[in-house]
Length: 123
Image (tube, one colour):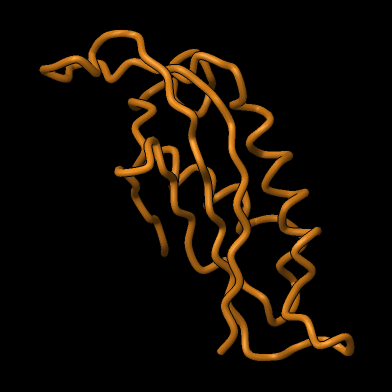
């Protein structure tokens, strides 16, 4: 089994509604997102999937969040834009991408809201 990781970053603000603490106030993060792809078969070049392809698709998704107030975005109309919910939303969008039609499959998405705090979502 092969496993590759691709990292991208974006900056955005949010509020955690109903939270008892500082996170109930407007604040922002320099978010880092890691896409983890797994598979068993390599292509003719000896690659599971080209890093460049995964990076581009992940960047396309994250560009919608970059320098935005996450609470105002449609994916978070009915739930808080927590790191957990963000990881799931990114996973759902990325895993349904046409780039995963071979042996490479999205395994997990890790969202880091700080160097010391992260969450990983996988199906």
